[in-house]
Length: 112
Length: 147
Length: 175
Figure 1 (tube, rainbow over the protein chains, first blue to last red):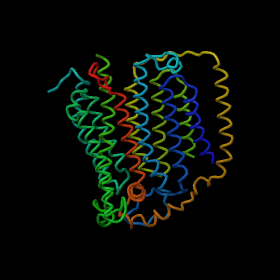
Figure 2: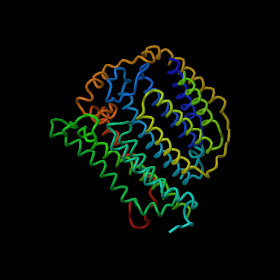
Figure 3: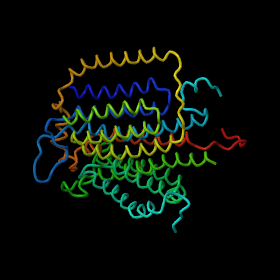
Figure 4: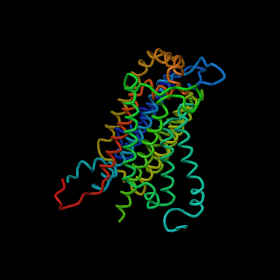
């Protein structure tokens, strides 16, 4: 229970970074922290106390495995997070070339 | 053969020449044994992409682009995606989309799990070459901007 | 117990990443959060995820550092700053307070409801022949979701190549 609250506090720190920072790279860093918090939350939901990892062994039968379904969902989510971060970085580089700054308030004021 | 004008120093280049083949071999091993030990197509594909990025960081942009150019990277990634779709359509022979139709051997063998190993190979190819294409696009932009 | 210590370390590193002024230090702190997450996945008995998170974190750090080095950051604080920060913090505190009641409804940590997963665990090896059960869930029981993931990856790579293309030829009538 306290683990869920700590994980959610990590998510809120990332959310604060997205809402209140003026540098685009800081916004990207905040987005990355939010992704890590969500992946951790999914895997925390599927953990069984004194469980074993979901891979069969050849010489014994394992009865208490952890849940494999959240692990399968998070596996694709990690790689998608990398691709979205790379896309965001490329947009930030284009914005720096056009306006000369990473500051988002200056981008609203300059037109054309 | 040793070109000291582009890339990093001689010590880093020698060590890279020895180890970059082993890194790619390790990535291919993780892709092939995805159904027997932890790993699978995604992790193995990212390791193969990391071996190419290592080559580019140490030897400079021109050397790495001679190995895989931008057009080749685009085409290989599309081939990987089409191969995955083809494996999915192969399931129609068995009754439904994505049905596992190839014969399954004993558990713990290398070729034991039907279409899973083909899916792993196509996903490893797609993810590996695609992530290297991202890196190529970023680096070519840097070089073009400095001129 | 180890998970609590690891999560508190991650929270400190995240606060450093958001607040520090230098861009390079901020990117290094995000790398620390990612590596601590890899260790957390190992403690939670998920070795597939630990391998994938480790190599993806390394590639993400290389891309971030390569793309944002040598660009400066002028820091300017202009008006209405106190009000905006105050409202954001009030919002986050209310969010956390309400989430406490939601987390009481979830099953306790360590006792998951494995209604669907019991079927996969009992018949996984028999129906798919693969010993690694996470791979059998991704590529056989739920392969349609993996097709969706491959499509998202493809679309984002195409989008990145379209954004980073060099400017087209001028004067040839190309739209």
